[in-house]
Image (cartoon, rainbow, N blue to C red; front, side, top):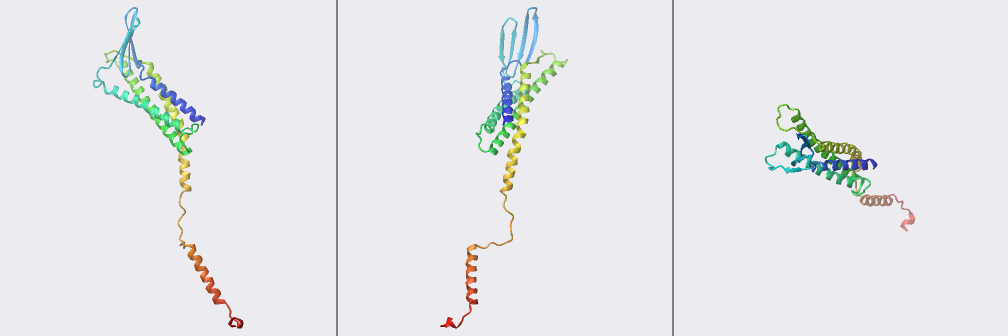
Length: 235
């Protein structure tokens, strides 16, 4: 039970970290020094591009056209949203199936629900890890490419926070999965073994009342046949 609580808390913290990266602007950033005392900071995320300088002026602009965006950005958006949604349902399933809550009902039902929550957590962590790793690989590739003439960016804080949250989801889900699987499957297998019908027999069963009546009639007939008649009987 304590291991389940620890895994649930770890997964909840990981899901919060992954969810916090969606509104964060610092997925990528770049600093450009134009004047001696003025530095411009460019940063962006899945939804917008922003700029700020040391004078305190900042401005953000959403991407103007959704259809004009590259496929890479659409895929990262979809994976990030899937990570948040699956993590939410994983938390609900794990909370219902935990032994300390006693919401699911029987032990077998709770184990199966918790096992489903662990699988959902693994899916959430996998989606998040793919999103942040793909984004980081693209940024690093463009930064180290000598033929890339556009403005080069570096990895922002949101990528590292997302990596940490995804790692928590994957590790806690991997620990939670084998804890609940033996209980549900072994118990179900034991129940199926005890509920198996007995082996068939070649003995033909006859209704007991019929046999009992036949035995009574046979006994009475035998007694009547074996009875010895004497002289006093005729009298």
